Length: 124
Ligand code: SF4
Image 1: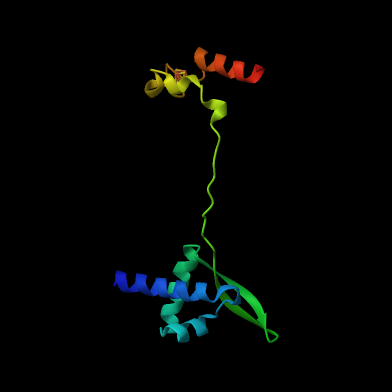
Image 2: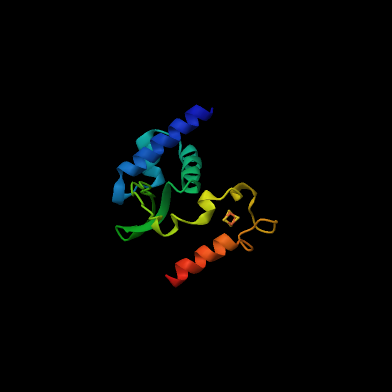
């Protein structure tokens, strides 16, 4: 069932996130969430494909162990772009805007208004 598999996916992802930088092996994960290792493998594969987790080999007690780590996808960054340099571009007030395009009669390549605006901007 889709709902069950989604819930298990969320549960597994949450557990991996909780382990933070320590990470968790698939075996530990299976024990911790109470799912068979085969089911865990399928869920882990999906989470890796969705780029929510990564597998990394780490040294523990002299042995290489493959552990799972959550990828931090919290992009709470606001990016502001200043449009000051193009606020007066003629296209924004052009009556032909919806009819204008590359390779047709009215186009940016042949437009005098746009060419003059670009020249004014580059010479200013
Ligand atoms: S390129 Fe010229 S015709 Fe096309 S939308 Fe801009 S100002 Fe209008």
